[in-house]
Image (cartoon, rainbow, N blue to C red; front, side, top):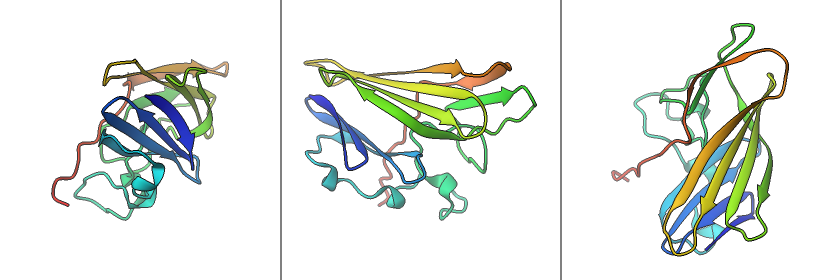
Length: 165
């Protein structure tokens, strides 16, 4: 059991399952896998091939399975975060900023930042010895002076497998 980062892919391994997501060239995060144990990042499909199910424009980047999608652009599913900035803007574009894996490899914290506004989101993941459980929560930080209204916030999103493929 461990949390690792290799080839721009975060692997969260418990005894019997793997949760995986990638850091892409544009500093977005894409959910790749949640399910049976995977031993290597080469067993995962490339992020470009992963899409959320939708009846709309499937070639659009808005259909990537974002690890923590925020309200904005043409998002056709429920976002994990919906905010309103002090100037009335509601688009939020979160990008990878940094990450820390604990010394015992049981905890991961990823920091995302909005590309324009002073908002940071800290995604926390923790695994426990002997349990097939991933503890997950999010912390929001206003790193500016103006107020930011949080309209809706979730600890994360969940993508069910596409059984039709």
